[in-house]
Structures are given as structure tokens and as C-alpha cells.
Length: 453
Picture: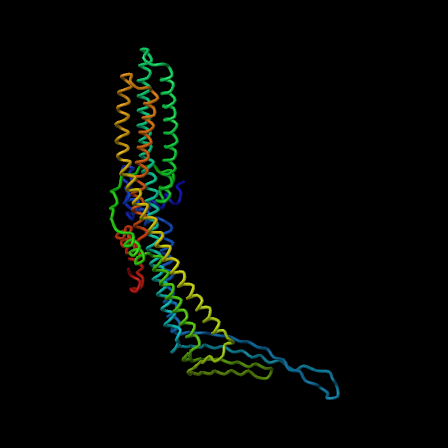
């Protein structure tokens, strides 16, 4: 029986929501689109926006009419003394009282509505910003898993080539041993290298399977899905200063924008607390039915009344002052949190900025190193055929070549991922795709105009 993630992925493909994979190869763009449609963290963030959108509407209901009904039933029994000289009591007949009524009230003035609506709209805007952050986090998680698979794919290819070269060297050593040019130790050493290469290849293929399962799980394909990933286009490098990157991050980062809005929300909440102690005015009308039943008679009355009720709070036992003090502390905490996040953002962006520069230089140096290692190995092979170098030199040359190719592959893909990570930390990562995903999610359930990006 298919698992739920795989079934979900199948349904999304079948209905055309997510494009189907072609020839078992996933591009990075396809992985992005699939994750944005199927990832649970995106769905959770979307639900948070939908929940926050109800807060302002809930505040407005304070000005909507209210209709209440009530029913009351009472039984009363009277006692009296039959003889004034006696302390004994005798009960008389009982009386039943019953009443029912309807009350319609219409709030006319409630000063808490406006700040409450403001709090709701700020919450909706905050959740919308968090939703965009969740989209970018999901895309970066996909890119990280994708490049893990891509890196391991290339490492497997390098190890296969290394195994081929090791087997080629073993064949050459065996041929020279057979004609008496080298000792048996050359063949044995080559055999050891071949077996190590095979063992390394098996280990690398297992790691590739695991990393492919992680990516498949993120994309809700099922961990047993068989696919490969394609080489994506290089991410553009922008040679900007660190100061410029930090400034842009401070303008765009979702956590900073949310922290700023949190201060506004606390201030609006304080206004709501103050408004709770202002007068309220309600219009009320009611209709009641009263019944009185005794042993001797039954009576029924119907009453109707209407009027205005003005409520003015005068004393609350210090509750208002305590709430305001607590609100002041919350505002102070929010401002301090904003400053803490600002410092954290600067450090966060600087770390990614330096990482990009370091990897850029490493990749450039490793390209030269790989070219030199390839040429060195070619020369060593030729020299070994001519009997000018030992087998140990060729083996070392193969090890150096394999190490250089591995380092270049790992560092190159780390560099591409670091570029994307820097873009994420400045809130520039996949902006077009994020906006499109925003519109797609809210096409059928649009948020307030005040929170549109």
C-alpha cells in the first residue's frame, strides 16, 4: 500500500498541480515547485496566515447585534405558626414561578474595537511575512538536499573513474610482471588499490542512496523513489560589499520585519487595554413572559422593554494599572528583541558573505590543482610504462588526482549552495518564485489588502 506522501505526490501530479518528472531526472526548478505545493511546513505556515486573518474579523463582531434567551423556574414554599403559643411550624401550599425572555442588544460605542482590529491586522501581516520566510526556508532546504545528492552523484562518478584507472594500472603492472620488468609487489599493491577503490565506491553509492531518500522525502515522493538530479544553472555572483549586504538584509529580512511589527502589535494591545476602561453604550430591547402558579390561581404576564445602557467603569481594584505595566514590559522586551535580532542578522550575513568569498577562492585554486594532478598522473603512467618511476609513485599520483577531483566537486557545489544561502540571509532568494507561490496559495482565499506583498 502506498504511503500517504507518495499518494499525495501522485494525486498532485495526476491533477496537474505539480509537473510530473521526466525520464527519472529532477531539475532544481521542478524540485522547488513540487516542494512548495506539497511540503507540510508550507501548509502549516499558510494555515497560520488563515488563522491570523480571523482576528480582525473577530474584533469587528463586538459591534454586531446579540440575541440571548433565558428560562427561569422557581418553587417557593411558605411556613407559618398555627398557634402563637407554640413553637411548632406548619407549611402552607407551594407557589411555582417561571419566566422566559428574549433580549436583543446592539453595541453602539465600544472603544476597544479599533485597537483590536489593528492588532488583528498586524497579526495577519506578521503571519504573512512569516509565510514568505517559510517559503524561502523550504526552498533553501530543497536546494541543500538537492546539492547533497548532486555532490554525491559526482563523487560516485569520480570513484568509478578512479576504480577504472586503478584497474588499468593493475593490468599494466601485471603485464610488466609477466615479462619480468617489475616484481610481484607491484601487482599486489595495485590489487590493494583496486579493492580500496571498490570499497570506497560501495560506500559512496550507499551515501547517495541515503541522500536521495532524504530529498525524495522532502519532495513527498517516498524514500524508495528512483531518480537522478540534473546540473542546475550557476547562481549569479554579485560582488557587493558586506555593508551593502547587511543593509539590504536589515530592510528585507522576515525576522526583522516580524519583530518590528511585534512592537506595533504590543502598542496596539496597550491601547486596547486603555479602551477597556472607557464608557460603552448599548441599545437593548427585551421581551419576557412571567408565570405564577398557586393552588388557587394561575397568572401570566408579558412584558416588553427597550432602552439604552451606558456603562462607565470607575474602579477595577488596580487591574488596569497592572495590565498597563505588564504591557509596558512587553513593549520593552519587543524592542530589545528587535535590537538583538538586528545584531544577529549582521553576524549571520557576514558569516555567509565570508563563506562565499572563501569558497570562490578555493574553487579557483582547486581547478588549477586538478589540472596539475591530471597532467601529473598522465606523466607518471607514461614514465611507469618506460620503467622510469615505481608503481608506488603512480599509486600516489592516482590518490592525489582522486583527492583533488573530490575536493573540487565538493567545494564547487558548496560554493553554489553558499551563494543561495547568502541570498536567503538577505531575503533575496527566489523572490519571483516566492511571490508566485504567495499568489497561488491565496488566489482562492485572499488576505486583507493591507497585507498583500
